[in-house]
Length: 322
Length: 262
Image 1: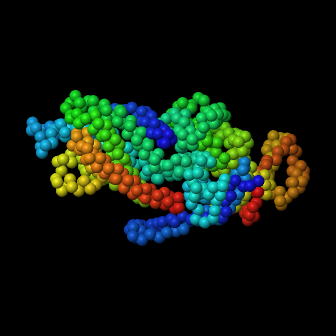
Image 2 (image 1 turned 135 degrees about the vertical axis):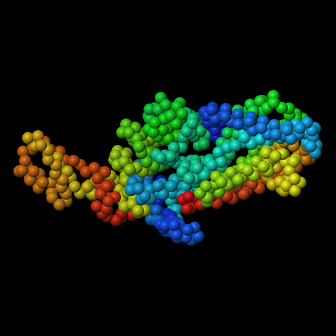
């Protein structure tokens, strides 16, 4: 299938004013400023097929937001090209944005003083959604996200979880083909997160919506995404499936054993260095074991290792994950 | 068009939620108008007219220009706030023209204040002092059109200054100074009739005269026939000039935002 999103070697450099400490330097700065070049995005490429659901992660300051901004058309790349759904986002912004939806977890686009439903109505006019489609989508979404109780309340009285659900609906009412979620679960409780994840999955499965998802919550990624792109310091360092990253980079496994006298022992080992049966043999000969459980490596731990550079990823082969 | 009208309607509804605010604004409008009327009543001290300008004319000028300038106030830090907190990028993700959206939201706010601020204040002051009636019903209707044009001039001046927040950290100071200029030169504090000839001549070359003074003169019948047309032609000319200037700043600012990332 033709990719719906194609990103080729994009780069974005920011010019940052360099500030030195001290009064003298401050005064000097008034007249003569030194600039530093910060490479926010440094040669990133990937392509995404229609109906894919991709997790986009990286530590703070890795260049995630800059990339999302370029993908959504509000920032020009310095070099490289982006083609999404036949449009060049930053050049054909006005036509392009009709086909996408963007949800920012930290910036609401709802009208603070008016009931939620009024903000939805406004979307109907902004995107010129046909009445029938609007009614259908609204009914479906409010039911799925369980919003009947608060749809007539002013947004300022809503809880964060309720507001977030409102924001998601507002961004999807016009049935966009591509949706960018920028930290949609930030600050939410477990139940609210679960609801949002289910909804995103549902949209992807039933409407074939292509979804790009940034988050710091690895549970989000594990439960929702099929594919993972990790970026750090402006470069793509991983692009592939979640199963793959687990198999490849989960160096250590943990075995928990409960002994007959009720004590618990935990053993962590590296499968690449000591094969499983060696470890087992050793354990069986040493203890009287009542129960045993092998913990699968958590994606959380893997990503932490990657961020902290405890594991080095192989250089990403172009076209990987396709 | 329907989309932008919706923005205006939503803003109108928005304003409805702050009832205390709007009661205070009515009181504010009434107090300012009454205070100025008292001053001018005292200055006239029973004299019928000064250079052909009667107290009634001055009072009419005040109620229209001062009353409307209160009603036409809107949040001039809007763009700066949007730029500072980064939410301006959200606006670019919608298939609407952001400038028109801003204009229509402000129009919605203005409409709200005319209905719930200007008209109540007007009714109150009618009991306090007497005004000139409009020269004719046609003059009155033409004045309404002229006021709308005046509003656009006022809005464009504000918008131009607001776009400077793409480059400056704060435009608050500039906006305050701009408002002093607008209030004085548009004749809402001191009627333009009483200004020194030289100053009056200078003002006639600025857009300020077109904001309130042209509508007032149409209402009073000071302008008639061809003068009305030329007065309104000047208003339209200023709108065109200011719109071009605004567009240049806006385009440059947006370019800076999308190229440099704000």
